[in-house]
Image (cartoon, helix red, strand yellow):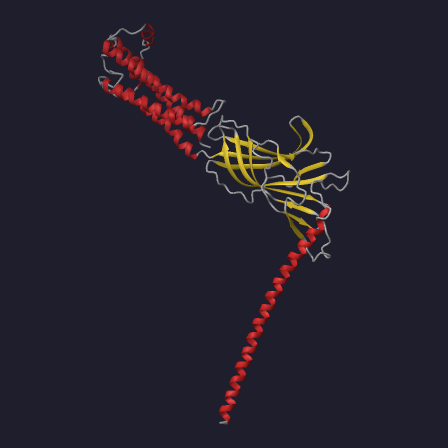
Length: 429
């Protein structure tokens, strides 16, 4: 009985000690959490007291000059985040960026040791002095403010850092002569709205635009280079400090490359088909189809090629192909008309046909030397390579087919081949 009592007493004693330990641990954690909460409350209270202390007799409308002989210094940096739009038709560019501005305000500095070791303090932009910096070359004036609302961080030394978000739209002088490999530089000019360089000094924080937050969201344009410049004049006004952020973008021309190289190749095949088809009636239908294709391709080029007051090199090259197609159709139709009606040739065509181009080809081609009696007939030329060439030339229309058409077709093919080569060299970046 005594053994059982002793055992029960030991078990009750152990359970009591375990409960006490668990309660003590939980109580310690609660005290730590309460201490952390109290410390957070104390910090918020200290920040509020310090903010109220600094805002006493503070006028945010007054620029924080140390004295009349010291200029107010503003350091500015652009952190580019994205290229939203580059409109070549309206000559404008739209980007998004963070504008980092730093300056010193001695009126809101404090001693760290006397203010609960607070080294920085957030302020609303409505409570302290904010430099009146504007974008000089805005594309359109929608509102007086170009920066978004953001908190400013004030350090104990009086240094202020303000990083607002901005959506900036400026006009750009874009030249499309090298389209679709064109590059354009857009300049964003910032300066003070009402201060000159005698009391206000604006300087860039870095020589380049920061790209640490840049995200290439545009599928049509890519960023090439960026730089920052400092100028002391704007327009006809001297003594106006302004910071210029220059951004160079280039058009991504891979989709345009495929579509543009397809146009002259298609027109070349269409033009050759007009000269190869034998049946005049079917050739008329084919020519009508070619005209429809030419109109469709013209509408396609009108949609793809941007508007420009300056001549675009590649557009000149592309516009030559429809013209050559139209010339081929006209010549083929005229040859069919002369062949059907057996009309005499005009004088200028008679003079043109005096050059015996077939004799040159017949004497130069090796396969003609091996078989002089070989004859064949092509579509629109009715070309006869045989010993009866002289007799066949007595007919005016056949004479035109024999002399003029082969020369014209070969020249046409050569010019188109050169045009396609030049087009490839022009379009490929």
